Length: 311
Image 1 (cartoon, rainbow, N blue to C red):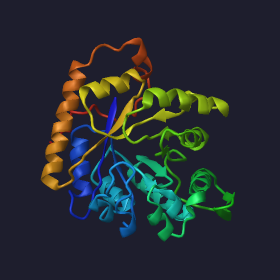
Image 2: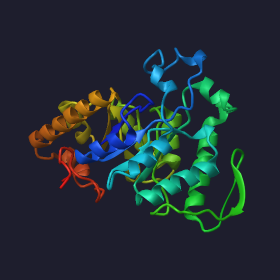
Image 3: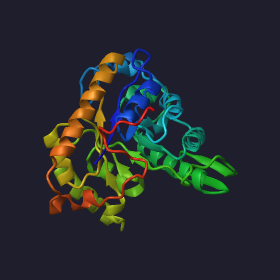
Image 4: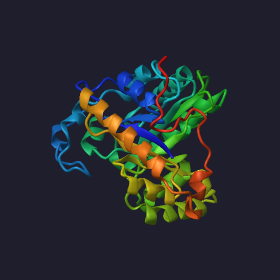
């Protein structure tokens, strides 16, 4: 199983380049950073999972600038957003930023996107919250045209541009789209419709949700095997990792909860040791684990716990 990290980095946290280098040295697969432009005071008690919104939401670094610093000091670490608030962004500018980061990093970018939960934050950007999901779907389609086509064009209700040239292109001709959304009917339908990866928050409820995601794919004649599920923000234990492998999950992004420099490095070491011990104690794959054991592996990935040589 590939294991990545997500952390809410701020102006008071460990630097993204230092964290990225330390994560790669310990064999972590990826680093995903969230996006919040600001924290309206009226929404400080409205977090859907935590109740009161932590102050760090007002201090988050811009993910693309932060990931660019990480790209410059790493060689194989996958760099991504977890998640970018695509509805508040301009599709043309975002496509350019993502393609540039992918080009300069040698094809190491994934784009996690979502419609956003903080309605006050969205409103300050002039976004109609009732249409934010439709806007997101169009933005993804428009960006894929810009990344893929020599002459790109798109006409929609929320995004439109004339036939245009746009370079650089991503290394692979596109960037994987990870959709951060809940397990409701609408969310899973969106995953089936346009995402490469479903990125649920945490790992709870997957036993029920994965068959419903497969059904959503089959309803539009999409092969469910073409959609991967990567839980993001989970707090790992050996039992939880065993459970995910049994479900056929081949990648997980774990949470680094304390981003103060010394605490972050200590927690990173603890996580790497936990994962190394888990790998060493893992039983032989069962039939239920066959799909995870045979899933394609990124050639850049190294097992968690393996230190990169510094000599």
